[in-house]
Amino acid sequence: MHFMGLLKSLDELLYEVMSWLIFYPITLWRTLTRPLQMMGYSDQELGQADERQYSDTLPPPLFLLVSLLLAHGLELVVVGDSPLIESKHGLAALVHDDTTLLIMRLVIFSVFPLMFAALMVRRRRIGLTRDTLRGPFYAQCYAVAPFALVLSIAGILIQTSWLEVQAAGLLLGAIALIVFGLVQARWFAQHLDRSLAAGFGYASIAMVESLAVVLLTSPLFT
Image (cartoon, rainbow, N blue to C red):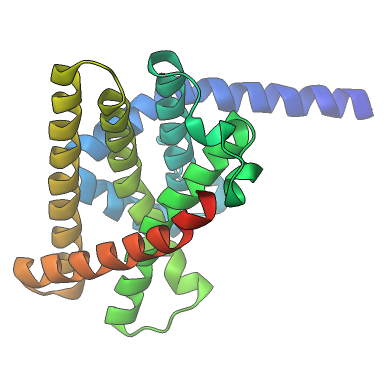
């Protein structure tokens, strides 16, 4: 009976992982072409029963994880192992293989949806709790995942030895930052019923807070 239960669990796991081959591109395309609609879609899905949530897409946190996993795979193919794996300084000593490096990057990029979501909750004055934070955090994961993927690809291009490719990486990174900023400005403006300029201001505050958290912890890894 235990063996049959294990087989059933493996069957479900295999189906879940293989379904990512279909639903990840669908989710990525939707977030790239309609980011604000996908963030609203996330809010709606959280109101569904657990078994019915995100039935035609990847759940936002998983979408962020798979995006970083894909970017990491591209980095291994194009650049090779990250120098951080070989470093033994500070907390970088804990990053001893690709798995721990991926976990570290997931934590770093998760700072952005966390800080943006926390600012939204504070500005709406609805009380910062685990329940009120979950909705905007999940929505932000949909916005951050393609940003993290494109920014990671830009970083990979910058690490190559060809100047033209490095320039393309810088341009791609700049475009990613601009588009991400515009999406966030519109998101804040819509949910707080403010102007686009005010939304840009809120997005800038959240970005500064996110970068501050990342920069304050980054010396621990050097």
